[in-house]
Length: 343
Image 1: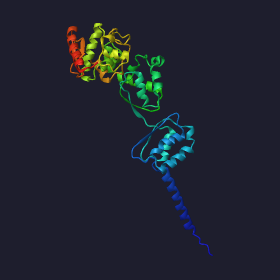
Image 2 (image 1 turned 45 degrees about the vertical axis):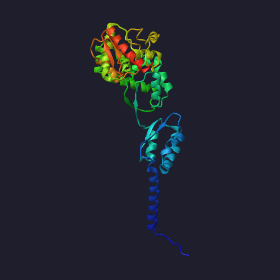
Image 3 (image 1 turned 30 degrees about the vertical axis):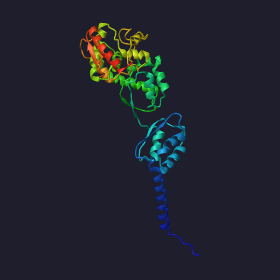
Image 4 (image 1 turned 60 degrees about the horizontal axis):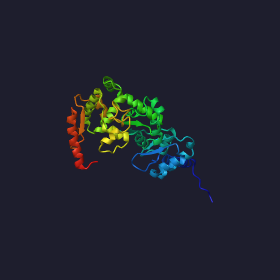
């Protein structure tokens, strides 16, 4: 039987077609989208991750073709010897080669970190640990370490003044040292210029301004009234009168839920008790808000020395020049509390 033979030209054409088919398949596998969802996905790789766990984090939103290629690249490239921590974006349409190069080179995506107006450093540590690779114990340990705080120019009572409640662009896997250095840098940037000059004119340090602002923040959430309250406390400081700020009692007792401050609580033994101690407490009783800080720096000049919450529970205050006038305001507020059964 006579064998059929292709001409050299046909053989070449078949070879080219085969090569193109192979190249097409390789291209398809190499550049097929790994993600099968229409939104950007993020994976978080920490120090405990292995190549298997990295693959497992991608698989829930991956399609079979793209994941097969990425799996091959990860398992046969030495990636397991150099796993880079971080927060990595996987965009719709990203192919396995693109994603692999991103993971291998450590080209992570930053995130927005919001510093909240926390009342305690433990609470701040817990909130930050939910946004960063750092655990809350590591953050809390640093913020309660006298040695760490002193290196930053603070102590464990004043470290809250370093934090400016704002949103910052950071990397998820930043170290505790990098985090604190960044916050110190942002603090200096915030104060440089007019704020620093105004504080100096008032003969106050930025930390002292933050301390007073933190009290004002706890007195009211009404930003429009904060400069008035700041003016009253400035008058007391100038007169050498105790601040007698109820929020400092709550802070001293760590009982922030208290609705009423009874006389028996005013004898609480604490350097934060501004009924027993003159001047400012040792440090902020919370991370002061920007509105609170600016209220102190731009306080309203007046001659009021007393204030009491209004009986209409509007969140604002009645101000008084004399103690007798203040007692009348206090009686109205006490009556309103009793009528509402607030203990």
